Amino acid sequence: MLVLIGGLIGGAKLAWIFFLIALAMNFFGYYYSDRVAIAMTGSQPLPEERAPEIYAMVRRLTQRAGLPMPRIYLTPSPQPNAFATGRNPANAVVAVTQGLLQLLDRDEVEGVLAHEVAHIKNNDILIGSVAAALAGAITMIANMLQWSLFFGGLRSDDEEGGTGILGLLGTLLMIVLAPIAAMLVQMAISRAREYQADATGARLAGRPDGLASALLKLERAAARVPMQVNPATSHLFIVNPLRGEAIAALFSTHPPIAERVRRLQMMRI
Image (cartoon, rainbow, N blue to C red; front, side):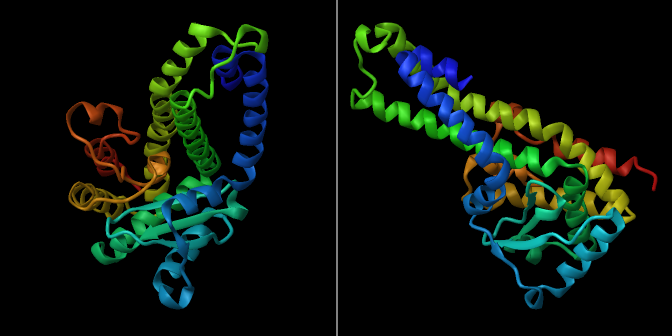
């Protein structure tokens, strides 16, 4: 996709540049996407002495799931939320926000942690982390093209492989469509996996009602409390940290909370 975009905008020269970017994204996305997600959310390591109960819950859940203990991080946000990231269970991270620890009771916190451990068990974390890196890269490229167009950096004549008006139109199209493409990548990854993580998490916790109650509280709190987070990471969280109304809800990276709760309430464990 990137090579085609580069060829359309700037001819063979830019196609080669975008090809190299694509190779770098594949390598970087696999090995360092978890660090990118952590950096984008501003999360910091949470020492066990500061949250012994959180560590005890995660340790118990990972033992039930047959997984190694992940690293625990704290996201400094008053909005209650959580996410998991990493390229495999041996390099997994579970992050909770400050707001989550303050709002939820013990059973609800365990339900949320079980959901995140389920993402690790179901091998969702690599795909989600790479999707976050990819969405961030697509948005970055769109911004680069926008500034290049503004300063005339993409102008080239036919001898240099430029495509004239076609390249200009391609650049404008990329600037408009790139953020939409990034959102579609996140939507395709997130929605189906959230339902599965809910079900797996409920089984790990031994009960679905803690997670169901937590989801309702998190949805209400997310609507009231803003969260400063890079949109490229929004699909990683248990509930969408970026709240929208009306038509924006159709393009949410998460399935409806009401449907998730309904499915949990129908489970028999």
